[in-house]
Image (cartoon, rainbow, N blue to C red; front, side, top):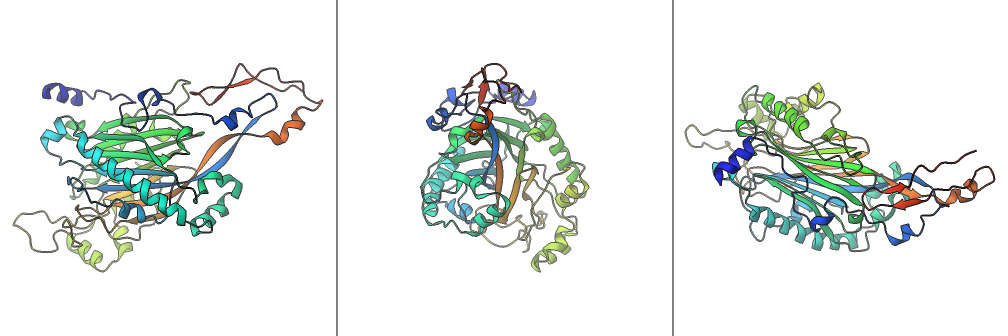
Length: 441
């Protein structure tokens, strides 16, 4: 068995795009779209369609758990509570959910650990978020901020905080120690289409999954999302950032998604409307160890960030052209003694032991238009790993196809000939027309 598994990994055998865990049966993996009956009744020759915007809140969290399996009473709510608001989409990314030893890198994935993480997420979302929805007030700061960016009518049903709603997993995918799990409100699930995954290994021999990325894409209404959970090359020596840059270039070039039944879906990561990278990007601080530790002890974050490798790469734009990151106002997330608040190497350790100065290894960055970040922080309650989790909250402007009955009388005036072609609904391809409908003056 092992020789076959190793050969498949080395030869970069492509994983099936629908080879992922979901709450939905396999026959619905390619398209979840279901037009509600109220919308169906409005489709007629008297109806035309136009795009408008819905604003949805998106939670993104990443955590390198250091190969430690979650215990039964681990409270994921502590991670969610860092956001302090209820969202419509939740994306969780983990790295090193299993130790990166040879048996895990070369062998088949251990799904028991990923199932345990998903179970903890499900419990947290469907109990604690429901309780918070009942308490959340319509005049909270986040709503005011969104209203200043988008008309109230465009926020629509995403702000129905008084009604408890369940969350469902649309995609969960593991590659060795990398796990990404995407959850949405039940009310949004019918408008999620074409979910798929793509795995790229950049580790041992440039192809094994101890390092690399698991990417998830889907379309919500008329907007395409791509979330990429990443674990890049490690190393704190001068020049090691070039290996991380190389990993990013490989992930961007080798990640590929199916074009879909209408051949109109984006194939590459940067072709999507909204892209978010989350994970252990492993970029360090280009300062002497003693200087880094002293500045971290004094909480002089700006001085450290001036020498942060990822920030310099973002400004340089060679690898991350037009990418964005929020303002960092939190302590470096790596490397701690597990179950403590003490940075590794702060005490005298064993002879020859790597000291590994503090760094912001764990990051969330984004690409595309329509995303606005409102929260960017780290979770300080979960300490079982040598990393601290990092979370962000975005609002995303999603294009929605909506019927506009208000122009009914205008288009049925004597200036126009009658419309002869009728529109039909397809579960796979939005709203299609039986040939081309047109108005003639």
